[in-house]
Length: 362
Image (tube, helix red, strand yellow):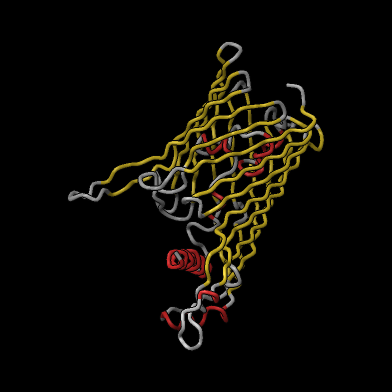
């Protein structure tokens, strides 16, 4: 068991240290790309154009204006990789006045109770399990969001999120980062358009490495001790479109699509080039009287090489599904999703809760 956790420790530590040495790694702060809210995850993250209320601080802060109540709280817990990694999210949203709104979001993604086996053997070479200590590797993000209606253009609203990032690997390394997201939403006759610019100013993570704790281990393994440095997250643009169809008085269908555009080189996505790649996400939601919702989505389009004699390549995708139920001021959402490789990784069950206070009349 300890060997398994020791290997896990190395898998966690080494990539983070390598990331800290590269100023513009392709997957910097990637924990902020997982997504929040079971409704969104059930639709494969296709949210930019239509997201509304408390979860908009993450997906598109312009959507904070579409509040259902004077005060809203959202909570989410998810576990990935057979429960090894845990993802927690909490958010609050309130209207300042009829044309502006404020939100705050907190995210934690981490692996806890990782054994530190550096001192498993004592000075005389005896195996001593009492020398094992435990630490956590966790990423945190605090988002402070603001949205406002642009009265000069009917149906247009804008928002921004200032974010503070903290990444911690026990006593071995930690980083602080700062960045800015900005978004727009425009609505007209059932059509909704959205634009989200993540890390619009680039996000800077300043890494501090405790070399004294690592130099002996790295010397024994012949590796170079990592140094404190600066990591930069490049901007990302997400263009979204959505349309709501009403079926009689009881049913509605929401169809949405997002195009996630990155500028950090070729990625294994559906539309790839250097330096621009585009990753599409598609979502669908069927609603009944704004009380029950069924959801589905497609995303994570990738090209995979099959392990056969021809080494042929196929395009894979990850389906998602979900359901939502409103119970008075409470809304409970569930999503069946997966952040790993769909071919061999177990699916993850995600639950989220939204609570509205002083609910407005529909």
